[in-house]
Length: 272
Length: 352
Figure: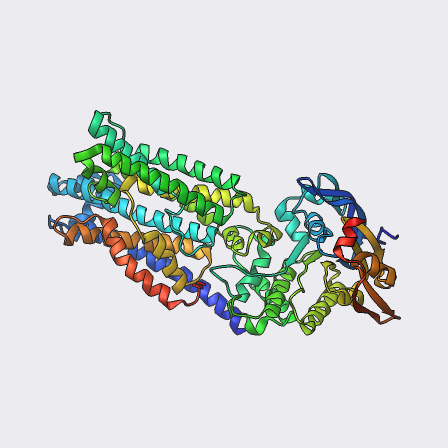
């Protein structure tokens, strides 16, 4: 198992985590390479979201830690950290007093802005650039509650890019989007990786997107790293059977086809 | 530059302009209303007195009767300044609580701080009447308001963190308990109940410079601090997880704003009782006309609230014979206005 990336930007060392008595993660170690598109996959409850929260510094693990360029992410100042990390969540935008899309994207400047610094013209033209890149500029004046889910996620992506992060985390950010929206968003991400050297770490429930677009895949199962490596190496027939309990057929160089019979049901799993 | 960007910049300029206009209007209103009242005093005389007092140049007062000076400087001016400060404070606190709790129905009194202050004030009045123990009403009101805040925060924190729902529920519980406490005091006061009742209705009549000294620094300092961190408050409206990803320490900021909002409310309530609807309506009005951006909303609400309460108080002072308490008037006018805004449901107001 190849746990270390060529030029690591984020290193996870022996991370364990528990909510009260319930252990969620046990001894997780791997590293994320610069300019990589790393997908974290795994069944529900395997600890993906918790791991992401630890990676971006919101949770402090009792054992081990995540190190960004050698610094423990938990001891970084929260504002300083926001200059390096951006996170996009699965959105349920609940604000009662909504802003326009433009104002929302401008919020991405927050970690870089002084308390009384007005938004300068250069910054505004950068915002425009970012919004054009994400194809959100034509509805910049609409309120965030007036647009569709796919458009909202693109606005969130624009806000994240405006943050000028080194690592972009996606917490199931593409769940709930149709396949076309997913592909266009992934394409934008790949462009960012190529042109701006951003690193992307994405939690992904959509295995086919993970297979096609990620440079490496980390599979979690029961709070442990089940497999790590290039998508083609990780996602094998045995892998689908062990981790997801489904029978899959691998189509060489193309992907996989998943059959609709579940191998073991929940009760049998518990008996083991 | 594109249209959207240009519109954004134009809006920002407009907000600045609106602020200037509101500020000038407030100052003009202050000077103008000081001249109004049972004793007819010309604007020229008012100006003379204010100028002389502010510059400390007593010689300018030579030609003016001492009773005129004292009406202006000792009776009308502190009352009007008090009214403006309380209007400002309630509007700022309303904006803070609505944005922080993400609840359009939140107002300065949501967390029960006002009930605490009211209980403290009732207790002070009660002790004064029944036992002749003289405790300054604002002091006890402020103390109980602060105790209430601490209690609400502790209850909400025990119930799963300082989340909006937890805070509101804790506020309602503590409020209910204190309200029954007030009722109990009223019952015990028997025939002297009117003093408590009148205080609770919220009035600005016969406020002195001492009251100004309590409310002005509280509103000034806490209001400025609220303005200082308003960008972070904006980010908080995107939700805790998002705000943290954008570099805002949500826990610390929430606590800070709870304390700021409560301090302002406590000072306002201690000085003049419970004046309803200003803190609820003013922020909504400005969101409706301008923007939900707290950086703009906080100063504009302050100015608008100051003007509105100034108008309302002068209305009760000048137009009604028996001086209806201003709290009654604001609620009377504010209620229908709120219904109007509620029915409009436009930009910046999305009710489910």
